[in-house]
Length: 369
Image 1 (cartoon, rainbow, N blue to C red):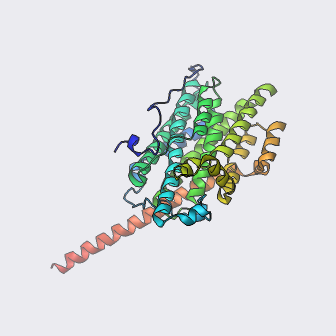
Image 2: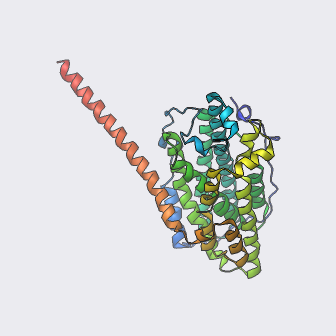
Image 3: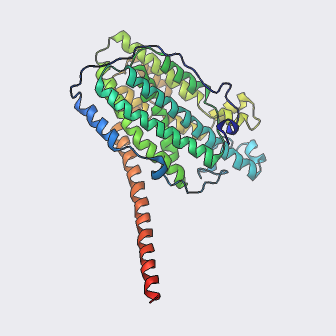
């Protein structure tokens, strides 16, 4: 079955064309480059992996409860709408929400792949081009994995959210070479990491947990790359240039906070747009998610040097100003450790199975004598 057949509402056009502006930059300086960035590039090469082999796709997934997360995380839970639903309807609602979440992950990863490729093209430094090339491969793998999960395990896709598409388009249309870093590495990737982490830490299902943990291990490197490159570059900018980028961050943060709530899912269950928005606004789960949403973004924005008065006021208004002092390095180290622990557990189980198989073969050989 084609992707087109699995969309709840098919995209109007099969391709989205974003006119690009800006220069492709070649560097003839083949010196070693920045030691920290080259070390990250080496790690990017060393940590490449195959989604077909590292992820256990034989694990079954119940389409009516793909994540196994508590129902009170659903916007309709506890409302009159929920009370009227049959168990079949509730299962379909869980399926739709999972489809909506992972579809946005899928579309975002394709956007990240395109942005990483744009960075290869436009960034002036060769060491940054090297690392971005490894990130482009990472993002391709992520899009492949999310697409496979949606096709084979959920059987449903949602189109890209209009506001996510708008932010991605603004990021790609800007001619300044640092904007794909800022829009994608800091804002969209920061949003994605918060969403990935929330599901990774609450799902009871092994397959989505594997997928999210392994993707987040890659993303930890990507955020580190964006921080290094932008921190160095933004030290050179004028106050006016920094303010322009802060305005972009403020607008993007408000957009993501207010417009990414899954209203499309509720509309597919016959709920009007305004009521769907109202229900989402009163969801305790959404309020918690919005707080966590900025746990990766705010400390990163502060770290790269975008911390002007207007930006600080915006974060106070959003109630996330205090997150500027969060330990981003600790969060990324935890992402790495969770993925490695999953690998250790899986290899231990596989080793035990191999030992048991050998023991059984030896026993059978002894009995045949």
